[in-house]
Image (cartoon, rainbow, N blue to C red):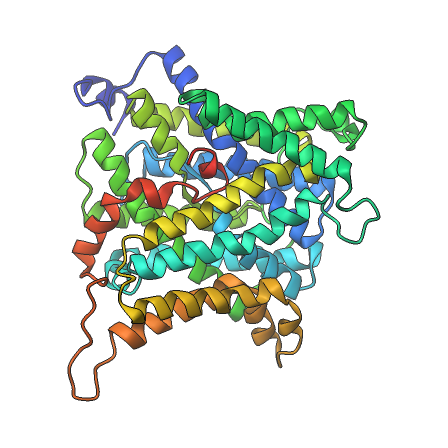
Length: 483
């Protein structure tokens, strides 16, 4: 739909186009609510792969640029692509452990990035292709399974947050020093206080404010290297495929595809939540268009040196909070994101943030992912002992690589090595296979096991839609700012 037609449909709040100054102001507000997540995710990947400051800045800028592109794909759309609702897209924290595992298995740092981006591109294209038939897969991911997976994601990421709180490098003599712990405490304290004293916009940007104040305290205390900010240009962009020709590795692609399936299942609830807030009914055709946009945006992100895309829930909360439902405002926010992504100085400022400051924020962000997993599990029938065993076994298996990464080193072959490095992959496989075993395989007598937690696809979509706010909160680093 053209901009002019949108104006004529002013009676529809989704299609209404406000004055330019309102587009800018409300667009900036969406960017502020989303910003922390968009910059935290590439920081985590860079740290996990052992990349330096210049590369961190480059990945942050690429993240902002591709998040803007993904947001425009959803809110404005292309033929057959995009839900055309006020949906903000950002990089997915769920993918961090798998991205790091794939990159390290391929050599780490620069050597691992071609394999990482190759897997991102392939997984995105795969989601684009299977989007029309995705409802046939949804029945294998009921709340029992998705809740378990999301909980595993939160538990896995807590190890990353703890390392950041200590200063980032466990081998450093200053790791865990009072200085590092103090900076983390300042950042976390600001976030907690803002959530205490505010229920409005300030709470939605509490993570960003906490990171800014924590960094300011670090600068005053003489911690951190901020010299790179002054040397960075105001305008610039890394070339597509900056780190080399994408490499396709079967295990790496499978790892990222599993992540994309998880992201897609979680996103369905977000789409229904947006539809309810703006008064639009979301059907299977729109879900297909939305998932196509997710897949296409992810493939584009891999080409532009960035990572998988997903819905950001704090922006959904912002729509409900403000009552401003126009998709063109979200599109304006996407344009602003792209502009920021073309400013290397912005990426350099983020790269200069001390690890302990980042840890103070990610400690609560990643913990909230586990909390959301528990909330989703609350919708499953845990009085059934089979479901209890499924959750317990999957959590335990998923925790193994976090507790003892050495298990991976004992596995024969690189493929098993990568598999046992990721608690998310192991836990996901365990949850899906146990769900198939308990609730889909026939009994010896030929009958089916009764399972109240597994619904047909259409009912499941409605079921997830009814809990969209729960599955959305804490889904991404930026989406965790507001519980």
